[in-house]
Length: 140
Image 1 (cartoon, one colour):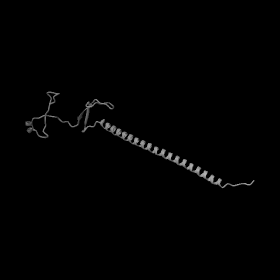
Image 2 (tube, helix red, strand yellow):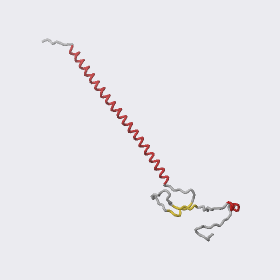
Image 3 (cartoon, one colour):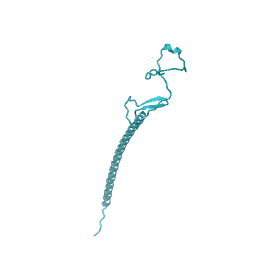
Image 4 (cartoon, one colour):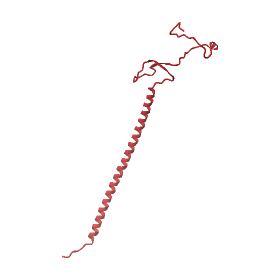
């Protein structure tokens, strides 16, 4: 029996192959678009996380600044040389506002005195003086 070749068969195969290739490319395009959408969503998520991290960093910096400021409040420094003669505070003790923690006596002693204007004409710098202390009456 003689073989009959049909010329349409290769054309049909090419058409089917082309159609199959087109569907494959469309599927690849759809996958690429889905991957692009997922990547864009991932970028948005990462940007939101970055903003959140920046906000947390700013909050932590503000807390650090406040802690450093509070630490400065815990240091008591004298403006001049002297001695602490009565210490009621201790390291780690919580002090209330206005609470006396110590008495400080400067190395340089001075006296607060109230004079009348009429007495000032008899006073000169460096002039020797005698004074009394109310707590020790009769002593000069």
